[in-house]
Length: 169
Image (cartoon, rainbow, N blue to C red; front, side, top):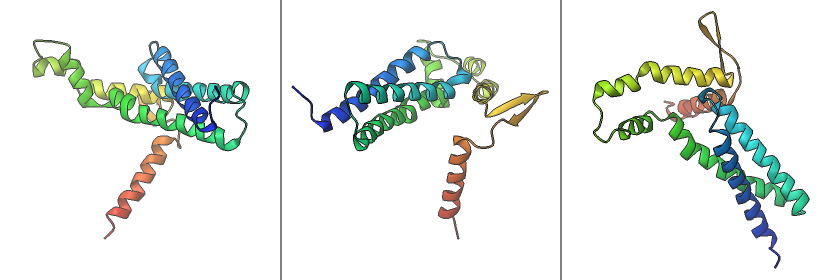
């Protein structure tokens, strides 16, 4: 039985996403929090490379459109996972509080929660991630921008333009 081109495109895109998840689960077991962004980019690119290799060499998918659609399916699935599942779990204060509270069946007092997770912990976690990604650098006890252009700046600029457009009087 041979698969038609449409099914092959969807199958390779989905298989690549599954490979991405497996690489992600394996790599992130030993990855430090400050390297999360680099780790997610590297696992995404590794699975993308494997997809292209499998598509071209094993499945003989040579048409640009077929490859483009397969990569698009993979990228959208990975984007959804990162944006809607992984991202909030790693960065959401609410989710972190829920995790901390759920660890104790008797519940936690406010003082116990503050000991585990407070402004200092939140700020330290965020700064460590920014330092690890190279977006921020630390010199002589002072923080500086490490990169002048990255995804955060692009998104912030876009959001600024949209905000100005929406609130124009």
